[in-house]
Length: 362
Image (cartoon, rainbow, N blue to C red; front, side, top):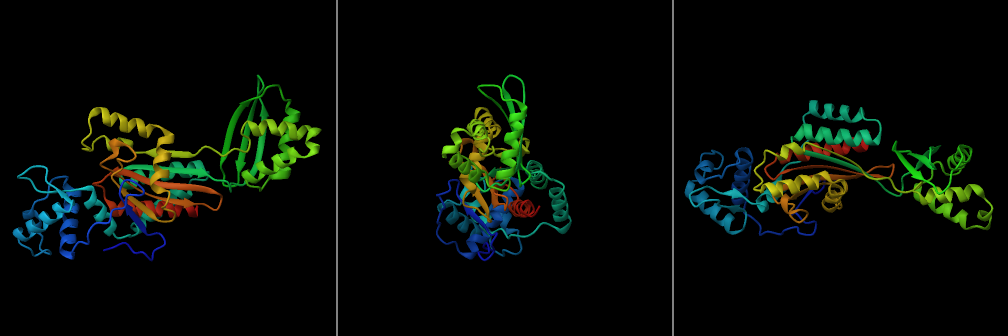
């Protein structure tokens, strides 16, 4: 069953690299049925699948000899591999991609869907929503759940607060209308009295509340360039704080749960490569870059990427399923599951899709 291209939230299946979508020869209905049976059996057992196992399936009604011939053709086309001469066949990443593209996009059962939405609705701040999405994905899929929120230029200012600290330090608190709050402590070249900081706070909140951060920054630069900026003490002070990042983009919010699920997998990695994998997942920027790379084109659609060796050699046998959602507040959220190619694709795709919908609706 092919993915429904009329669905605005349809999913796309690609190879590991974002520009490496394979175009295999068209399989016959019989070949595809046998291939998907092999993939399904391998997902359940983790073992090579033989022709006799498939021949026992009543709905196939094919002899072992016929199945062996089809399996040989699939192997020639790169869909199956044979670990040992006397063993059955195992699906390759190419087979998993074809299988994933046929997985029907079904909603989760009603009770699970209600529980998912209830969990998301209990998260009030953006940071809480990111953490909850990651946790729920791990709970529902038993894989690595990842959620990020990346502010973009349309993020709107709610208000700021400026608090003087000791040793010329200032705490800058910036709240935006998407409920994101960013705290930053900066050190100035000279002491700035709290009264001056209060004047700056009032000026920004009065003139720039409701503006996007980018527009506020550009307008402030415009005002500074005017002649009156030469004698406007407030603008001079604001220049200093802007240079310290007052209107700068917030750092991405990131939450990841369930990395321990990777420990028990047979990923055919040496101990050194397994350590490299976990070191990569411990680095925030690398995880954000992974999602940027594979989910950049998945706006509103669930993307399925099988085999991630182009991103990291130790991710050759992993798959990433995720979606990018642009929120009205100007935040770009990415919801994803990282796990083995032998994952329950239907459940993971459904969970990712509905977490994305819940994230957008909350």
